[in-house]
Length: 335
Ligand code: UDP
Ligand code: MG
Image 1 (cartoon, rainbow, N blue to C red):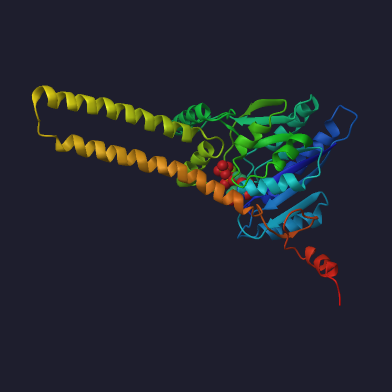
Image 2: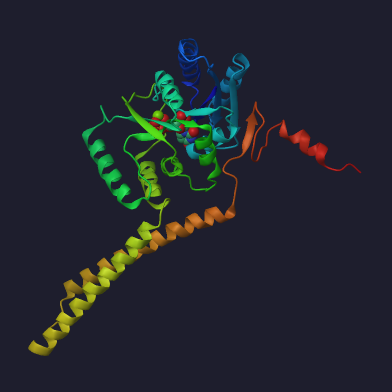
């Protein structure tokens, strides 16, 4: 059995060697310690997501040292979702483990994942506990997951991220979902298959900095809410109808007042509140519609998810590598 370790890397020069060393160490003991007679071997699929630091030279050096290392390097930063997709598309393993490069995903859990996979699970999901997180952070996460699960068709669990093992068929299924706006938490949940979850304690980043700013997190949250279903549109319809009913009742009340008590000087304040409230509701509803149209706009362009600039392995998709160029020259008819 071949296991592919898929690692998206963006500006990870500081940890990449340590990551490789740690995982290699961990998996070597797994090779020996496995009780079952079927062998387990490993390969690394590093995806350099257009790093601006020395990540790519580090990767090619690693590949020279360790033949199990394969890497793909993007022409620019396409984001972690694209990097994971490239990893899924290029991994040759019978099962894949997706891991962050920053060692926040403990490599010692790989053996546990492989064991559980052998018991027949297609997805073995590591769920990080919120131990050590700030209370406010935990609270917002709770609120967010409560909200998002009321909206989504698939269930998203707090603490569950991209750290997981996927069987070949689960990985192929995720890679076959070619949508441009990728919300992997949703995609993984959507493909289903027998899955199991276990908890692990969150580790702090070993080196480098997190790529998540507060603004990015908020947008990611919105992506999750909007990219996976059309319930926000439905909610907009509900809100519109509710407002209409309220307005109708209010109109009856005002007309009734005029008829019974004569004309009253209308309140400027009430008017202003109603106008601004309705304007706010309208603008945000248009915003929701716009979000969906924006997504459709990106989908219909059918652009590739990423471009490959360099790699030490045959690439699928659009490639700008040195190795890909000569083939194209040959295939052109010579006059
Ligand atoms: N990453 C990536 N492309 C990006 C941002 C991040 O491939 O545009 C990778 C990054 O190198 C790391 C993983 O995604 O291996 C998780 O990133 P990070 O540690 O910054 O996120 P956090 O752990 O804070 O959620
Ligand atoms: Mg991290």
